[in-house]
Image (cartoon, rainbow, N blue to C red; front, side, top):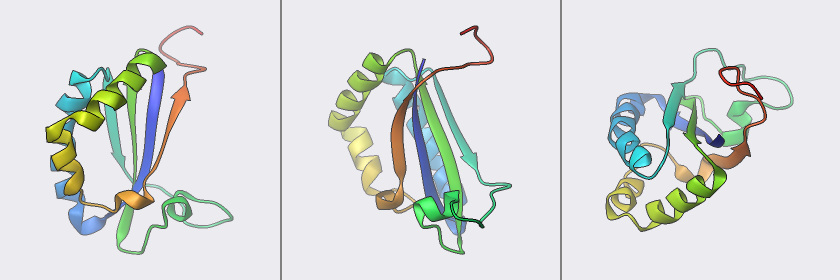
Length: 120
C-alpha cells in the first residue's frame, strides 16, 4: 500500500462546503486508482508547544485542521493517478474553487511500513 497524505486549514464556516467537495471528489480519486479516501475534521488537536498541526498549516483562529489521506495499491499507481488527475478537466475545475487556501496545504507520499489489518 502507498499513502498520499494531506494536512490543511479550512475556515470553520466552510465545513459543509468541504464535506460537499469531498463527496464529489472521492469518486474521481477512486477512478484514478485510490482504494480508500479518508477526510478527518479536527476534534482534539492541541495548539501548543514547539510544533503542531496548527503551526504546520498556519491555521488561524477561525480555521480547523483537516487531515486527509488516499490509499493506493502502490507508488506506481499513485504516480500514474497524479499524472492523470493533473490532466482531468473536472478535477482542474474543482481545484479552482476550493473552500480553503491550497497554498497552505501540506502534501506528501508515504510508503506503508506497518498496517494493523495486514501482516508486515
